[in-house]
Each structure stands twice: as structure tokens, then as C-alpha cells.
Amino acid sequence: MNRSQLREILDILHEKVGVEFIHYHKDAVINAITKECVNDDVDDYIEQLKINDNLVNRLASKILVGVTRFFRNPQFFETLKQHIPHKGFLRFWVVGCATGEEAYSLAIILEELGCNYEIIATDVSMDRIVQAHVGLYGNGIVSDISKERLERFFIRTSRGYQVKGLRQNITFKTHELFEDDAIEDIDVILCRNVLVYFDHFNYGYLYDKFYSSLNDEGLLCVGQIEQVKSALFEKVDECIYRKI
Image (cartoon, rainbow, N blue to C red; front, side, top):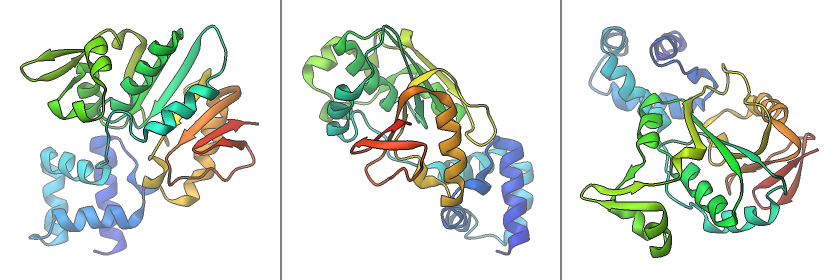
């Protein structure tokens, strides 16, 4: 696959899905494309993408594939409790919320702390946002959520576990980091295991956007394997940085 073919595929994805994948890790993008068109000539595959939205959505999903679960890295949530700003009302932004597990995990913590809060949870995928809003999860979540929390925050159904009483404080919506405006008046941003999808030369742009989103001394939280190397933020704990 040459550069011109790659550019054409990225343009098709941008037009049909609304995501500018040029900002994503090039190797990951090429790997996903190669796996999808393994039995086709690249030019033939491009022609199919132009007329088949199912192929486009499948390719986009391959590039965006990620691991999500409730209370991923439980120690992070325990640490976050110690650093949540002491304010009457708190606004959180969960970036790359996928199917909602991270946002609901945060909401559970905030409910247990008795906080008055709002969570804006965003993702580039409308399909994932719809799933997150529905809030229905399989029986496998019992390995990540205590019995007490399951009884308090979920309803057992024949299809799994349905979130109850948490969605009233959460707004799920689509958002593209490189094209949409920053979400303002935020106290804490959770952007965990999202930066790894992007090329490093885009980090400065994202740090600027997060900086403009955060209120004074607001917090930016990233994944265990991610580091924020920017003069705009100071490290206050593992995975947690404060706006300077």
C-alpha cells in the first residue's frame, strides 16, 4: 500500500465516520487496513469502501479497538479519591469513554463520596455512545464490581446487569478531539489509555486542549503506561497531573 492509497482510505474514513485517523499511530492504521483487505487488491478495497458503509465501519472499529472494563486499575480510583477538588459542584470529562464502563466507575466513586457532580463522557464512535447510554452489561462484570456495588447501582436482568440511578448525572456524546471544541469548565479529565492511540507529535495539541478545558488547578488523569511531558502540568501522583 503506497502513500496515495493510504491517504485515500483515510479520506474515506473521515468523510463517512467523521474521524481524522491521520492523527492516529500510522503503524496501527496500516495494520488494520492490511488485515481487512487481505484478500483484495488495495485499489479494489478502496472502491469497495466507497460504496459499502459496513466495510467502512468495520475498518474504523478495527483501528479504534480497545480494552475497557469497570474499575480498570482499581488503585487509580483509590488514589483519585485523595485528589478530587473540594468544591460544591464538580465537572468531569471522560475522554474516550467507549461503552461507558469508565464513566460509570467514576460515578460510583463519586456517589459513594457523596459528591455533587456532572460527568461528560465522550467518544468518537456513535455506536459506543449508544451502548454506553443504554448501560447494559454482561455477567462478566461481577469479576470487577463488588457484590455491594452491584446491588446498589445495578439491576439484575435476564440479559445481564442494567445500570440504575447513575445516568442522571452523566451526559454521553460523540466528540472528536482534533476537530471539536474543547469542553470547558472541567475540574477533572480522565483520558486514560487514549493517548497511546495517537502519534507523539500530536500530544502538544491535546495538552493545550486539555489545559483550556480545565479550571484552575484542575486534574488530568492518564493511563499507567502514559506520561504527560508538558510545562502546562505538574505530576501529583501516579497517572495524575495538575494544571499549573
